[in-house]
Length: 451
Image 1 (cartoon, rainbow, N blue to C red):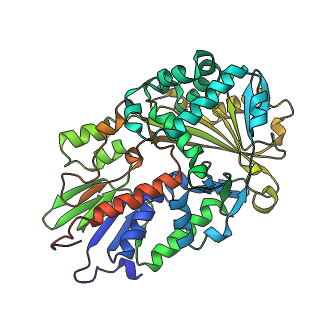
Image 2: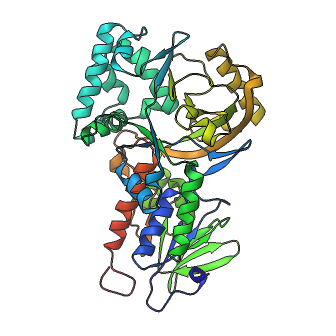
Image 3: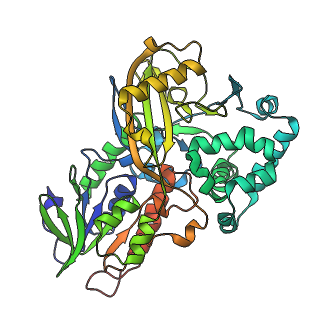
């Protein structure tokens, strides 16, 4: 393969460590700019959090993903890959489980009928969202605990009955450490369609899911002469006499520049020559992890893409019924795909529970929520565990952000910790890749005086 050959004379050699959507996009842009690129991915498959897997007889995403009409960066990338025109767009419904019952809150009328809140609570809630959508200076929100801000504008009752359960569903008890910038980012994404002039927001997906996206991405990178190394974990990246040495169990390879896209604490471990301050910033990032079950069911649960839980005591933190978005007959073998996520800290004992115990707890939770659900409806059940999913937007987070351009010449870092006030979606990941690429290209080439 041409990519495996030595770089042509004068061709700058880059290594990208990590084959998620961030690393793939960086490799793509570097190759387009004429760099010689080698991509290292520790897993057998590409994609990271966006990777696909086998669930029964179905191949679909390991975690739930959706594209919005307003996701301009991701849609532009999909257009480059020749996939945007194939996307299917759907209007979905939203549910809330409150007071032991399912309620639809898919439009204004249904929201006004929502029985868990009084009219004054709903009005204050709506005013809070409208006010948050107008805020442009998010930095001052980083200094305010999210609970304080929401209680101030929505009231204690609305916070206790609506906001607190939703915060727990996304952040666990870590919401106590989270700034108001988190809820601002959530509202900003909700209102993104209106800000870009769209009349309504729709959800979309590529037929075949991210398995198809990643297969196409790998083909494009190969055409661009990117060398893709799967099942190739990197032990460390250190300077040597001629550049940066990428060390693996199989040996060492030297590059002019390296960009590491691993989660912040892993990046600190892989890059031992960082300064104490750089390492402290990386190791100081607080992460949320996820234990996420994927289920294939013979029958649907309800008619909601996402069901938020305001009742407590459930083992999962939400219900995402993907088959209300993805056509089950065309793409899921006539079955119904459901995700049951539980967001926890990396140290949470729930990570250590055997699969059988997690399955038992999750199925018991479904029986509690859906009286018509039967365990005999389950055709496949599989669990994904990831300890470092997203960085917690703690108070003053942007002031402690790890650097992307490091003190080690030629070494760059980019990971989800650099997404300030985001909501963890693929569009934001692509945005980070594009911004990082521009910053990397502003640095003079190795041995040259221009980018």
